[in-house]
Image 1 (spheres, rainbow, N blue to C red):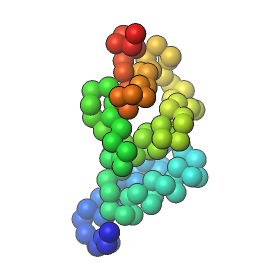
Image 2: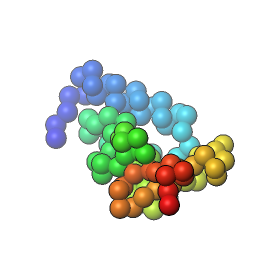
Image 3: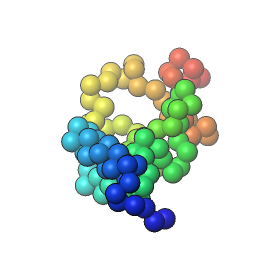
Image 4: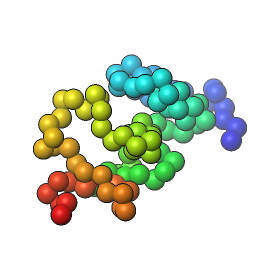
Length: 102
């Protein structure tokens, strides 16, 4: 896919990447993958795997990348209590609220 580096969409994607890079803790591999995704012209709020949250909204690229690589939580979620964290359902490929999980 060829993209125009001077287009408004490309600039918006790279600006969103820079904001996420500044405020979201991530590893070097995550940063590299996210930068590559944004530089290809994709929005950082989308993901290529079709992962969604419990409401059906798509996860952003970084959240989906973390799930794809086998870790759904980590130090970036330290502020959440375990009671507030939804559970990942492998069959539905989405998060399920704890009260709906049986």
